[in-house]
Image (cartoon, rainbow over all chains, first blue to last red; front, top):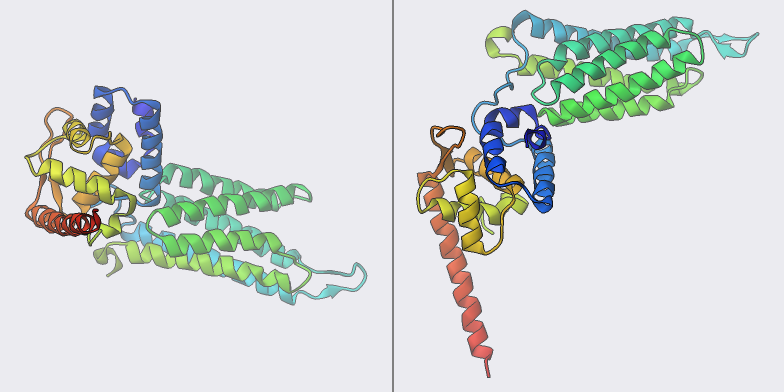
Amino acid sequence: MSRLVRLYPPAWRQRYGDEFIELIAQRRPSLVERVDIARGALDAWLNLQVAGPAPRAAPEAGSSGRLTAAVAIAGGGLWIGAGLVLFAAPLNQALEYKESQGGAIIVVAAMVVTALAAFAAARALPVSSRTARVASIAMLLGGLLTAMPWPVLMVGFFGYILATTVFGVIVALSRGQVVGGLLAVASLVLTSLNTEDERALLTIPIGAAWIAVGALVVRRAPASARA
Amino acid sequence: MNQPFGELGRFAEPSLYILVSLSAGPKHGYAIMTDVEEISGAPMGPGTLYGALARLERRGLIEALEPEDRRRPYRLTGLGATTLQAQLQSLDGFVRTGLARLSEKAP
């Protein structure tokens, strides 16, 4: 029976889990009731309703929160810088390609730094913090693979995008709808990145999104920690 | 349904049943489920029950009491009683109007 309860978010289980298990132990759920439980779990993920202070809602504390925010903002800055460097890169007349190596290094740096910010921020998320941590590790691997030669770099690049989208969705579900949504959408926009033309500037939305993540971490830190 | 039931979406009707059930005294989840089944003639699933309980508790219409073993009873708050009364009066007016109109049209 406890398998059914595992469908619910951790914060919900912490508040209602014991009594819910007791309830479904008293009457074995029918198929229709199992569907009802699955619907209830989906609702709880999409619209968490827990009375009182959420058990794991207090996110960052003290200097670690500020450090996470600083890393996220730095990563966002690197993404924006990478786009500008790629856009302004000179054309190699012989190869008819832009000299994008400098920009590519900054892209990899941005991926690694934002992955570290995501890992640090994940433990403070009230929803799916474990999945968020896994996503941040996938982002880091994606960043490192992007430093490899083609075609491995493509696997790394799109892996980072996928993992960032997942992380953004989890942030959105953790009462950060705007910032998480912005991050998820901006990461998907990154699939259209092209270092050879103005699409190099498509790194700017994801840079802005990571800066917003940093601002969200600061805003959620306790007032005493911000002072 | 009126506020605050209107904002409860698909949980509005189950919430009303739960408040009516708790108006007779505190009950835990299983007792609410069986009582609601008696009142409404239709079973209420555990997912719907706890979706509605969480919303009612968050809005201060019910409150949780100390658990008895692993079962936690809930009771109606003062706000919950007032809200339920207003809702039932509104429904009563609606029912009376409907019945009166039907009787006027009856051959």
